[in-house]
Image 1 (cartoon, rainbow, N blue to C red):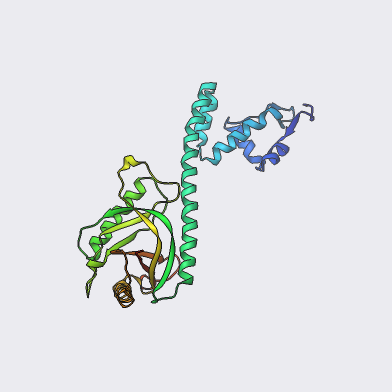
Image 2 (tube, rainbow, N blue to C red):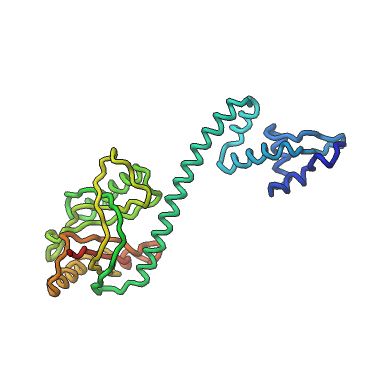
Length: 276
């Protein structure tokens, strides 16, 4: 029997990595990871020199590398083959890190936006100082009907995703004040906020807007069906108080299906920047 001072039993080796003994048995059976020695009694013994190898195998499994790929590598192992395998899965790790960073950014934004919706007073015009942001925009010259708007929002959504900018995308609308009528309004652009440190290169030829500063804002909890009356209320406030503003309103969805039940209970926010 091997000297126990230099070898681990199956149970001891498995405990070091927090895996069941059956994992080691299975990897031995399919020729992925075998014990350094097997005693006359059939007991498996693992060497301390195998610790790093098994740690690497577990890492590959955490990356969802198929067992057949690992076995293929072990059957044809070489220094060059190992470099190629590591480089391939390093790229996978980089992609996962980017996706996780996008998810973290989105979670932070969603928490802040939801807290904003909880604090909001409905149907009252308020002044807010909003942090700077860069918006990526898509022009819109289509009809005002719901189907046309939905298709345009979908195109913007796909474009944003195709740029690899985020895992989840909130789409807002820009409404020119000149296009607000008694019974309707029109969008001129749709937009999404570029996540911090995720601004793509100039080669993408993106149309962007700078956002942030002091804004007049109004919140409503009647979904998009209440936007028109919110527009008129905001414009009336501007006129009554002789205020100067930019020429467009920003429309943002604050609370959606994830936090309220039903389209007609969505919380929507309109904002317009105050001129200096």
